[in-house]
Image (cartoon, rainbow, N blue to C red):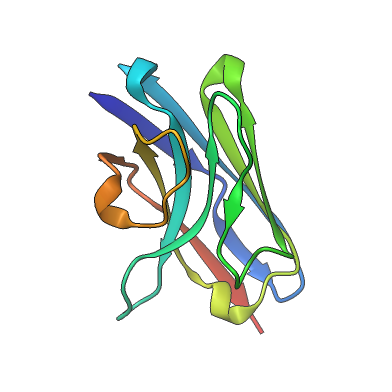
Length: 124
């Protein structure tokens, strides 16, 4: 089992920034990718960004690639998502997810473990 603990969500005005964290623990030896997804009310869960934990480039959804930055701390099995220039349409619950794929894949069904989610609310 892999446990994922997210933190860092909150309420921010449009144009502001937030930093999300996701710490992985447990049997992480088979976890090769950590990614972020988000789900707005009434909508399906969508890929945001992901990064391989042991080398390789990050991958972003088109809607966020110029505003969000994903980074990793291999020593702590932790990934961060820096959210910049936030917009009201970024409002959602953000979930961290772990996969044993060695490259980032944007499909929810490829992820075996999920965090509990953290709310990000952007006011206009």
